Length: 380
Ligand code: NDP
Ligand code: MG
Image (tube, rainbow, N blue to C red):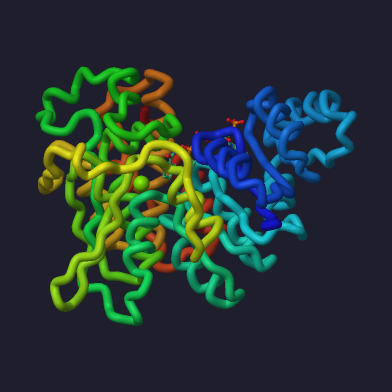
């Protein structure tokens, strides 16, 4: 039995991870963490029987403890709870499926406890990649990408035999507003932005896909995962989402991974790497494909992507500023407090406002996040 722990078991990635556990039958979930959806969490623990469960919200954690008293599981709460789940002694792999910079400390704790990381929580790598990657090397653990593009790149690099990457082709669907002008984005509503053409995901990342901020975060994620320079990453809009990303080598050969848009494949690949397992559900039939098209991204309309490039070029705590500003702005957009085009405006204002730190330690990254939140709350 392979033993895993999951941060964010009730979310989009978390539930799909559990679908794989259910289907494959040789993975044991030793610990799980969720935010506040204790109804789903209760059903999950009754099915998967982990020994340790974290519920972020303290009141809900107490309620959860009462409800599940018959099971004899340990229930923990808050950041201490997340850290306990991350370090749970029996697990070999931690699936990081929570959203945002909240993932930084548990990811570090898991690495220091010798766990491999199946990394979905890209915000952790974007803001603390300079800490995470050397730490993983020091502790001899693997960072296995779950993000579909990065899994595609990782899969394309298998068998590369040490040959250098010339270029990474990072594909993007373009989101629901591809082809629109900046003016056409003024009146966009939350419901419109939540309609992703190809993927079904959590709310935050779906908005990030509509602004193309997600692709900006993924550029930074790729930089850390594959040790490439920003100029080696080419974002390519590919609306059909069939090619999940590709690697170009020195000789011009491009190796890509193709498939249906199903997150279970990259999750399963990360859990069983380097082995492949049968996966239920639809398969890609090339005869069904009419055409595969490619466009340059429109960074004038989708300014979030241009700002991400700038944050990546500046480095230091600027990716943390970019990410924290986006997290806050997206939350405000989802609460209907700001308009869609305010998202890049807020990011830009924060990047101009917040003090630059050349090589921030974890405390400084979290301080940057707090400063950004405070600034945004005072201005919008
Ligand atoms: P969801 O919003 O669907 O799920 C988030 C999960 O995190 C839920 O289980 C939620 O619990 C939990 N959570 C939220 N706050 C806390 C907290 N304070 N403590 C503990 N748990 C918490 O997100 P996604 O699954 O879409 O995304 C997860 C990560 O994976 C993100 O970083 C995203 O960028 C990345 N990713 C997602 C993809 C996708 O297809 N969804 C694709 C590629 C990357 P609850 O619901 O109980 O509050
Ligand atoms: Mg992705």
